[in-house]
Length: 76
Length: 324
Image (cartoon, rainbow over all chains, first blue to last red; front, top):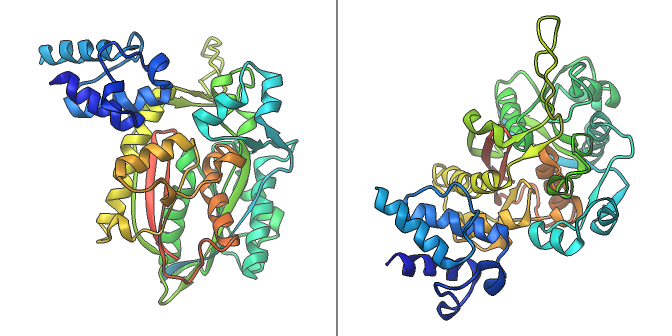
């Protein structure tokens, strides 16, 4: 579920197709997303899951974000 | 009494600095600046200080509205880059335009300054004590920018703009407002700190240049601004669809796009001129408003509804719903 929600946010923010956004997808290399795109995605994810993502460092692939969110949700 | 916007005016320094010119000064490039910010050029002062930019903008307003400087009853200047701590920039403008010895003062709410100043001016006019008030926003951001710091230097420009408010019995330009501050997040954008240095203290140096935490400011803008726009519109019993134009602080075109997306309205609702001027802080809203009125995109007396919205250091943010 976490992946699907995150995928939907990325698809919406970057105007991509679902197939283009998979776990191994790299934001910069595969989706040509820049730092501001990533900020917007993080902003939406924070709202969607009601969590705080303090730093975007280390979040380079969709898997990185999914893992981060799942760890945060487990703390709740 | 009710407050009516009688007209607008602006002035920017003549020297235009392109992204290509900045490439020669620092490690940056035109494509990066354009895609991240929408900025192509900015006007940079070759020596004119904030009071001069504001004074010339004031003269432009007076010329366009046909009101003489002697008829002005107060002057408010919104600026975070005053000529100095004293005299205030507004006092220098009072002398520059040849106004009578009227009330004149500065307001500092960084990039939201024009919204704050306009809100105050409306209340002054409402009091019935004043007939005409000049509300100006002016900045020489280039004097507080670290020209070695490519993350901020490419963003800002210099300029001034403003409006003339007049007291009327019937026509009210101001429908509603929603204005805020949050000092707990003030460290996200700082400039020109004056620490206590006197005979009690040891010297304690701090960077005086503008410093900005890009992500927290971006995050703040795309959360707080859409909320403020929605609040000012809905609390006045209008819908977003009834708003003809949003004149937002020109910080970054990508921020405007993100705000539009949050509000689920077309980005075209947001007027923009950031490509030419960059972020001129408190001057950006009146410069853009003057441009829209001058080119006929907006017409005073048309009764169209527009929202002016500002956001910036403080943190400060706010929106005003206007009927033209």
